[in-house]
Length: 292
Image (cartoon, rainbow, N blue to C red; front, top):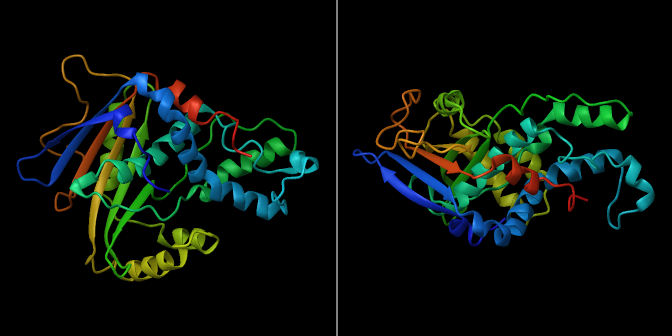
């Protein structure tokens, strides 16, 4: 999906870079007056991000939506996905999708041509199990563990379509502020990865996007190079919060990586997104209309 036009007017960036040039920090402050105009585009992006999971659920249940038959509404396994989940789950989803948005729109690590081949929400197994609980007339659990694996992956390709760099993103989202989430995000991007390349290939095998086959070839070759480390990996921490600092304007250091970041030989970018009302924004994005 193409980058969201006008998003930098809603979330304008301020970029700072470390003296050694291997760390950048971006602070994105919301201009709430721009939200109404941008909201439809943001919602379309989120619906596209979850579209593969919706399509897969309906395919497994044998439901065709071309055209959608009203008599099948009660049997649709995706009828409550994902808008019926609690705010904790939706915060996780919101952060993950925002990681992709930031990769495409805010040139992390000074690179402006990151590409997103697909989304991995079909692998949040425990969420779909809870949808089945609701389908059987029972009350689903109010708390659902998050999806494991890679949060967001973006890539650079050369003119031949080969992958030449990967952006490994860990995203966290909170309605207020949580320093533990910041630490955990930096710890995660310090670990080996990515680990979901085969899962991405499986998603792309079911995709009707014109570039899907080229991505499959590129990702298979990229996976073969992981042990050698020959392809540049850069890391991105995305932290979305609803509380702004009083004495300082950022929660994450701007002149050096966070102390929990232990992979100092890899480029790191930290992007803080300060929203006026995180939960209201998430509720608007994940409102029930438009998913069918």
